[in-house]
Every structure is written in structure tokens, then in C-alpha cells.
Length: 527
Image (tube, rainbow, N blue to C red; front, side):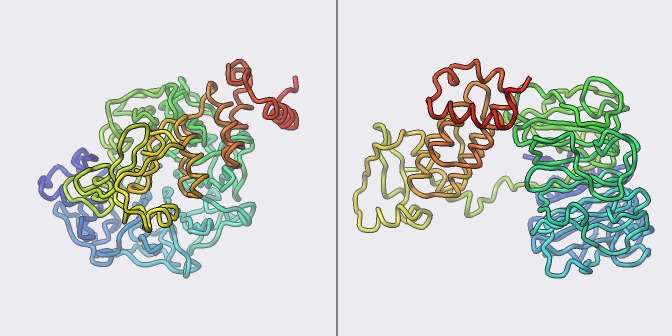
């Protein structure tokens, strides 16, 4: 479980107080400010309170927590902060609140007056649901549920993407080449901005003196520009440090570019990089990347749960990813970043109270209260008829007039059928990719479309040169078009190794013929 006590700002809080915290954000030039929400959705702040950034109604520092009445009961979804500091927060309802430093209109309220309390920002955001926020040094950016990006604030280097260098006092949509794109992720460096769009392209704008835009030069960019060097690479997430950038691809690969004086790119040297460069993080797939604009530190977590850090780490410059004993990337910033801040709004799960979802999950395959057993490969799986009927159309018809206490299943293997039933209790799956192929077959047979998507995600995360052809064959068989395209692209990107595997040698004739034809069309066999 995440321990907020690792951040020094919490040192004076008792264990009883810390146990009540469900969300927290540590920020400020020295990590001396914190805002946190409790299990009752009450919001508190404490610290040095520069520029009124605590939002408590005055500029007095406070070593004891003070309540933010405006935000209590609002349920925070995400939060970011600038260097002033200024703070931008979004609620689960999609409302945006800002407060703190405002000399450059970074609060988006049309003025340059500091705000001592959180104020809702609705200009051009009315009827919009904000799902993500990001702050640069003195500019702000939000992402809406319909994929639109809005910016405001300091614009000396084009970081608001308006095409000029005039400061922007209110939120305005970033258009230019983002006009017809659906954004899925945003991030800000000190004076630059980034957006990942639905098809995996990355668009960048703003300050570029260290090559942090990844365009191959050091010229500022006043409007969004696509990173051409990432052509053919599908990016899922972007994270910005002070002047460097990290991206995570759908294949779990990591690329970095920009400033590198502390080794924050993880490329093994300390030279700046104006083009995306691959970062070697062991052989495991990366599932999370972390950086924040107030630090020169980078972190990543792999599918196997290992956490790596590099860059400026407590005065040392680590030029390659260093394996830690941490269980989450947040711990890297608590213990090794300068200052000790958080790179995102922390979420702390309670360790005693069980939610409804957790209680249901606990009952899966428990014989105590089960009223039906499935027998698969000679093994029993204990479940509850009423839950299966609520969750699955197939069981609504099968179990309606069925009073059997034991139901035999012969069409699917035990691991696959158990994973299916567990999914109905948990909304998640935990299977190796090879078994996920069998579950994909079941999901197709039972017309469980969401399960089908989860299977495809699991298969994507487990793809390798050895199993790529088998997974491509399964994708074709079960008409999983998106997965088929992903497996095909993986095979093309690793063509030399894939064509030497036993899977390729034993490939179905029609599939092989189609593969060669399609590969030829994308130029895979050109010298």
C-alpha cells in the first residue's frame, strides 16, 4: 500500500491522521506544500503557502492542516501544479478549479490577480467534462472527455499553442492540426505542451531550447506539430520533466528526448537529444512512466512490478535506469526527487474497509455461500446464480429454469472458464497471453464484447517474437481486427527474429500467403 508518510511534509502528522488520507499532492519549490483529501471527501492543506497556493483564503503558512471548504465533498479526479505555484484541479464531475499564483493568467480567470481560494473556471469549458489536467511553470492545460485540449496562461515560447506569444487569460481550445484529432493524454514541461491523440501520434508545442519537443531541432513551436520521428510507433502515454520528455508505446517500449544533463533520458550518457531515443529498461514491458516538470528525475514500472529510476536522484546523476526495491513510481519521487514532490495526485486505498466490489470479489469460488458449481476438467468452481444472471446474458437464459447444483462444461479448459467466471465477479482478468487466446474464443462465443477487449489487451501485453505468429493467427480466427493489426505491426517491427521462429515455419498456408502479401504492401521486404 502507498505510504504518504514517505514525503517529509507529512512527518508531523500522526498515524491516525495518515490513515484517513485517500488522495494527496505534494508540491512547491521545496516540496513544502501539500493538499490532501480524506475518506469523507474533506480537503485540507498545509505548508508554506507561497502566493496563496494552499487555497485556504490567506497567505499565511500553516504547519497544521486547514480545511478548504470550497472543495470539500467535490471528489477530486486529478490535480496539477505550476512553479508559482498555481494549482489546477478537476473533480469527478469534470469541473475545473484553480488558485494560487496568477501573474501570467495561469488561473484562466481573465485576470492577473492571485487567487487565495479555489474558483471554478467555466469560460469556454461550460458543458465540457474535464478528465485530465496538466500545468507547466506558468501555463495550464486540460483535456475534455470528447478529446479536446484547452490551454491558458504564460505564452512567451508558444506553450499555449495559439500561434502567437501573447499570454492567454482564459481557456481556449488548441486547434491548428489538433482541430480534427481526439486527444487521449496530455502533459506539460516547464514551458512546453504535449498531447497524445487516439491513433498514437504525439503533438508538441512551446519551448524547445533543449530539444524537448523531439522535432530534431531547438526552435520553439507556436502551434502543435506532430513528431515525425515516431512514425509507425503508437504512443499511449507522455510524461514531461523540467526539460525532457518520456513516452510509452502500446508495445511497452519507452522513448525519451530533450535535456539530459543529469542523465534523465536514461540513454547511458548526458548529452541532450532532440530526436526520440529508445530507453533500455531490462527486457520486461513497461506499463507506467513518471516525470514532473519540477524535477529532472524519471521513473518507470514494468509489467512484472519492478520500478526503475534515473536522472537526478538525491544529488547523483544516474544515466541508465536503475532497479529499485520500490513497489510504485510515486516512491521514487518521495525518496529521490529534488524537491520531494508528487508527479500525480496520489490515490491511497483503505486497508480495512471492503467496498461492494471488493466484497463480491472475495466471494468468488468460495463454497460458503455458493449455490451452483461448474465442473471443468474434473475441478469445481463455486459461484452464485443470481450474480451470473445479472452479469451475463448467456447465463440469464441458461440458468433461468435450471435448478442443477452442478453444471458440467466440456467446451473450454479449466483455467479459461475459471478466468471467465472470475471476470464476472471482478471486471478484470489475470491470465498469461496463451490462455487469454482461449478466453478470447469464449468471449466471442458468449458475445461478451468487453471481455473480448480485455483479452486483446492482455494478449498485446504478452506478445513476444516467439508467440507473435500464434497470437496473430488467433486474432484472425476470432475476427479481432484491432488485435490482428497490432500483432501484424509487431511481426513487421521484429520481422528478422519472427521469421526464424517455429511458429512462422508452421504457419497456416492461407495465413502465410496473406501475411507476405500485406508485408509487401508496407515495404517490409525492401532492401
